[in-house]
Each structure stands twice: as C-alpha cells, then as structure tokens.
Image (cartoon, rainbow, N blue to C red; front, side):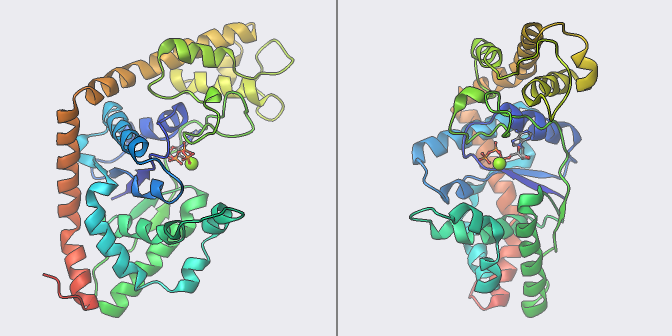
Length: 322
Ligand code: ATP
Ligand code: MG
C-alpha cells in the first residue's frame, strides 16, 4: 500500500494536476492513500486562514479529480495521533541522523527565525507513513532521504521495543508531464511560486487561463519545434498540449504553423482538461457540509487504520497507554 501527500503550501496548479493528481486518480490502486499535508505547511511562515482554505481546496481538487473520498484525508485532522507518534519516533531518532537531512540545510540556509518544526518535519513525515502502515512511498529524489529515515526508525523501533511498524521503502512516483513556469521556463511550475503570472491554477477561470497562456514566454522563432534545451518555452507549451490531449509533444509540434496558433490550441486544451475538475471542485467548495462530511469520514478511517499501531508503540516504549 502506498501513501502520498500534497502540501497545501499554495493552491493546486496545472503541474500538480497533470504531473500527479490525474495519475493518482487513474493509476492508483484502491488501497493507496492520499493526504493533504497541512501540518507540513506550518514549518515556514504561514497564514492560518489561507492555509485552511488551501487545505480545503486541495482536498476538493483531489476528490473532484476522481480520487475516491475513501482514500483521502487531511493531515491535521489526525494532529493528535501524529503528534503522539512523532514524539515516539523522536525518541527513536538520534539528533545526529536528523541533522544529516540535506533538505533542512538547503531550506534553512541563510534564513532568519527558522522554525524547529522545519528541522523535525522528517520525523512527522515518518509518522505519516508509519501510522498508516504504508509499505511504499512514491517520492522524488528530494524526499528519498526522508523515506530512508522513516525506514531506519521503523526498523530500530521494531528491533528495540517490539514489532509494530511496516518498514517502508521509497518507490518512483507515477510520472506524468513535467510542467514549467509559463513566464520562466527555467523553473518548474509551483503552487508556492512568488509570481502567479506563470502559474495556471486548477480553479482559474477560462479567460484567465487564456490570458496567462497567451503571455507565455517563447523565443525569437515563429514555427513550433520541439527542442526542450534550445527552446524551453515552446517545448513546455507542446508538452502541456500533449499531456492534455494524450499525445506526444513531437507529433503536436508539426500541427501548428505559428506560435500564436499553438498558444490558442494550448489554451483551449488546458481549459477543457481543467473544466470538469474546476466545476466539481467549485461545487464541493460551495457545499461545506459535504466537504466536512468527506473530511470527517476520511479522518475517522485514517485514525482507525493507525490506532493499533499507535497504541502498541506507546505501550511498548513505556507510556501508560491503552
Ligand atoms: P511547492 O512549491 O510547495 O513545492 P509544488 O507545486 O511543487 O509546491 P508539491 O506539493 O511539491 O507541489 O508536489 C505535489 C505533487 O505534484 C508531486 O507529486 C510533484 O511531483 C507534482 N508536481 C509539482 N509541480 C509539478 C510540475 N510543475 N509538473 C509536474 N508535476 C508537478
Ligand atoms: Mg514542490
């Protein structure tokens, strides 16, 4: 069973949808779990009201994209369970091995007022994985060291106190398209990007999507050619069009005589690909009672799935738990 998370550090964008969410909905097994990692979004400066809205929007987008509501939950709905398990795992983790996490060094470097949670968050991530008993964690290169930590902690706990945890391993994520920022194709499209002009959000209105795509950076050429290194902006548009229409970027390139025509086609394809998701997401967000029901049911299932592991871990490590 796999567990994947998406951090609501911003609003879901086209890259999240084409690169991850859409694949989860189609290719995921019925046992896989997806959570909205809002606790992880508190490790750097954040706005509480915005975070709550982004968590709800992310959950609604996952469900609207066709992921079964049975398979999703919001991390903070399990804050008590995860907080308790994080403590157990911090008592299983040495300071030295936590201090070896490269991502902390990268993210904390040169920053003032770095939160302690940014340092300890890999242990919370281990709790996310181990509480659910996941055997596989699909992650990119940047997160594989954290899965190795979860693996080491599971092994060590099991060997020291008694068998409780499934030992997880990192697996390659299902890869969809890699979408680049429309105004700066040297970087990937990101929901936490400082400049929203190059980012298409899942909930953007069709006219806004068209405007953003018309303004996308290309180059001094005029006829679309697929050349990711030499012409990254055009290649990005071709890849987006190919992903939205289930084709290959090279084939798509020959079908448009000018950059202008290509942009029109990309805009329409993106609008159509996102339309059903945007409509269902908007519907869900307009029905807070239904969204709350989905959240509550997801949280109850996730808590129940982990309850015996949390209780055993607390008991075995010496707490007076049930
Ligand atoms: P952040 O800026 O906070 O890192 P993000 O947009 O990069 O946000 P993540 O939460 O890091 O989103 O990633 C969620 C999922 O979306 C991951 O599976 C990641 O690989 C995928 N993803 C993110 N951005 C893109 C992109 N531009 N193209 C394809 N897939 C993407
Ligand atoms: Mg990211």
